[in-house]
Image (cartoon, rainbow, N blue to C red; front, side, top):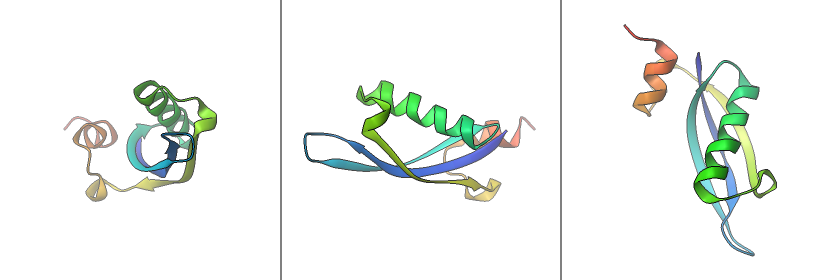
Length: 77
């Protein structure tokens, strides 16, 4: 698996948006996008249209902040 960091914003009110930065472990960029929509949607009760992903980039091992993502991306050693 690879680690991805996504940045963007999601709707929090009628006229307000909250910025986010999330790390996920996925096989490819499409899988990472799906996980982001799924996780943010379930946590904040949002539709996919209420989530705007600005950027998804591949993250190398030493740059990964989330311990779970690091474990999944680097594999069990």
